[in-house]
Image (cartoon, rainbow, N blue to C red):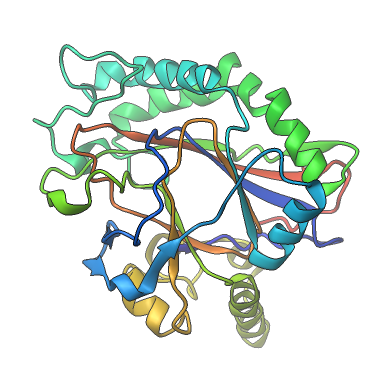
Length: 307
């Protein structure tokens, strides 16, 4: 579980995170599903609820109010589905030499080769194999992905939500894939594809945790190089707060619930850099690989925290 704490240096909106979902599943209004993270067992259903979707025709003042109140706004159908699936196809076509895809399926489908071990084909953000890094570097350097980062529909929504005249995206924007687990039980397969889940109303908590880290760093006179690292001694393994979403939410998370969603291709979740979030386990019965892009926007010219 990771808390993205890249605090703005000037205004409350000088940096904005967004997650672009490339997983396709129909939105359903029903009790929250059984949820499982990659590093834990099923989460107590009482600790899980739904994210609230927002349609594009919602008044802008209401959308901004939701973002300010909840720390996120999940906007439906921001980017045309065809544009999203074009990028999905390119991504898996580039990775196909690694054996990631199931034989006799196409890269646009992105079906995992179930004869392989999931841990051997992890994407960025986890521990990808060295043999796949050249392919991943090729994708991120491609003109298609760089153009996608400047997609006019996406950038238009960034400006509308923030009121900025001109936005910029941090160079660390990346694509992440999440393969299905081979032994995932069937009862929650149709709903959970490994998308992000958010700890409700956690911006204040995320900022408080970061401030506590800063105080500890000052007391120890920690070197600057370690202070700006997400992997310093006050963070868990790989920069996480915890590997058990349920126990952490009940303890350090103050009993707050995890919010989950049925994301569709073209949806965008804009969220505060203080919003605590984690990825779920991909349990798709068809073996569909989840693909999403993690981007960070800021107002051009703003002074940024160097982390």
